[in-house]
Length: 233
Image 1 (cartoon, one colour):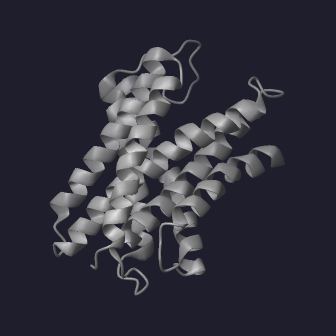
Image 2 (image 1 turned 180 degrees about the horizontal axis):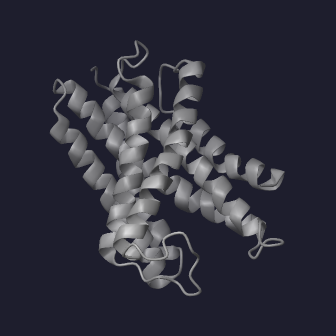
């Protein structure tokens, strides 16, 4: 793992972090933000482990689970949804573990803020892995700046928008005295967005439609932020 992968793997997450924090009228404790970011990163490893198990059981039928294949394994829509669900649950768990019952977690919009921060930690680990993997083959197989741009406007933005959707329903759940059904709805919405994004990339091989999807989703998420900023838990 070289320094390039680490530095530029972190950069997209930091940029989006500053953007989303502008939505909070009352700045959160820096230590809690850092803690949530790091825990989100740790849950990326947990998600990877679960995904490896899912890949072994659902894709490879428990055969050659730890061997690289010479050809790409076709992924069904079901597999795409399962992998998306694993990541959305992991990101929410990271945020929940970090801030649940913390006194600083005291505004509706905080649910979205901390869900996004955890997702950025998650995405940062994913970015470092993706950039580092490309660099490990004796040099970059793709233009490094292109990789960073794609991670910035693609995967990282996807993770934040999906987690922000979960955070919105999390806030509604708190308002309704812990109605867990709302959190499940949020995870379902996030999983749907995540799976559709991945499906469009795999099906069409271009970023135009996935990016348009994120732009549309972004308008709704910004609206959700504005709604919560006007409410109290």
